[in-house]
Image (cartoon, rainbow, N blue to C red):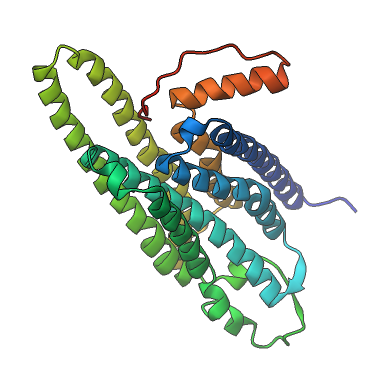
Length: 322
């Protein structure tokens, strides 16, 4: 008996989704492992800023290694106990939340470097940077494990025994009001709003400093080009964060506030892998635009992959801006 066209179409969508997610996972792991390796190799990069960048890279590696495979498994559905499926779903929330908080930490760090450049090294010490990284991960665990405490769909499965199995789906165990009110409004919209406010202030400070330095020194044009590159990078950070994370949360809001509205499955898939692709883009935005990182990466590539000895490459001793 032949399969119906609807089943074939769904299988095709599933295969396309798995292929795209696999490519994103490979790119995310490769790119962020290179970030960690470069920071470990180049001692000049071991400062407070790169402490946050490495934390973000570790979170994004976890996205490629754990989150995306779990998302694929959960999207396809498999039989397991309720709390097993709930715990796997919470892992997705924990790791993705740590990536968002790491982005926020980097934004705060960028703001402090521009706002108080003379006191930055005194206020943002290596020890305080480690504490901030730990707080990001602790908050990620606390917010991600909230459904395990009781904010879940266990009541909808009340007619099942604790040992009975269910088809594991994210929406089967995670309540949508938690995803909309707590996860989205509380832990996506608020960090995004804070980042927009920080970046707006950064642009204001940069514009004011550019005007002053352009009038006071003959090197104003050179300084302007350098700061303009920083401003463009910061704008790109906000843009990519919003573009990658908002679609899946908007889909969740539509599903929650308009239960009768029809959402095609491929639209949900697009929203999911757009949120994951942010992890593959982060190395490009936060690391590959830094000159010393790029020089070190080229040297590692020549030595390890092309089996060539590295040649001395001129590299600035001062800390370059992103």
